[in-house]
Length: 346
Picture (cartoon, rainbow, N blue to C red):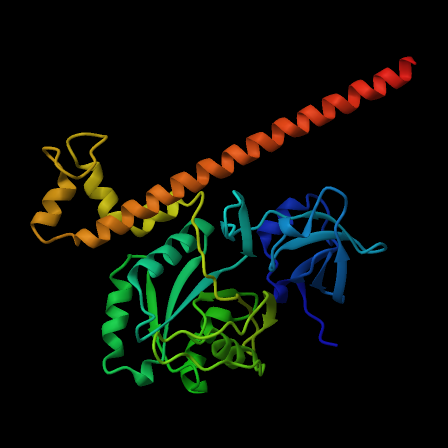
């Protein structure tokens, strides 16, 4: 059995501060999540932990650090992560879903073919920024593209935050260029559509041999091969979280991330004559002037506006759902207290 130190597992001062005067806490990092329990790694080896009353596995994410009782193997509390990747839950349900926690780098995987999509990449970049991790765009199938550098330039032009690498994910030599992003104690999470090479990258960086699926010729997409999230050790000493291909990536509470990715438009909007400028026909609109001069692509403006409206709607819906839940909890607690008092009197 391989034994890892807390530093190997990604422990840092951020977590030690949350433990107060406890210098050697019983702490473990979550490597997988099931419905009623979680798998984890500690300096003493692998563990299976259960949740206490009031904490569900849905409130935890792969990559989380938790304190636990070494006798009962029950989680005591979740330590606040330094980064948390989350999205609006798929479907109509108004809640956020944790994808991964304590991630240093978000590896955004797309291909040098028809899967490349500026709007989707901007969405992932905003997700990374709002989560508090570094975005790295991985452009796979570069060996099949006529001009892979064109895709790289298009990717880095989307945001000053964007760093992009073109690679053939099946070539171990090219994958070795990523070792600096997943060195000792470092964690990368991979996101992207199905069939773009996430599993191939995972296999190359971890030495695993998970099955991959061929892509469809007509749309460069593939079937899902990853169905759950797990924290996996990389051959260079870090950690990797591969995620299932997500059909929906709704942003919520991501206004800061959107502002970072679209900093050029945010700066222009701040220079408009009117604070509530809609950037359509108002006089003194710096955004419209930039479009007229060719400085700003009108399609980029549309994507910015769409993401802002989506984030605002989702954030308001989730906030309303939380407020209703709090009101119901107060009502239930009040009713329970009155019932107990009535029984005491009787």
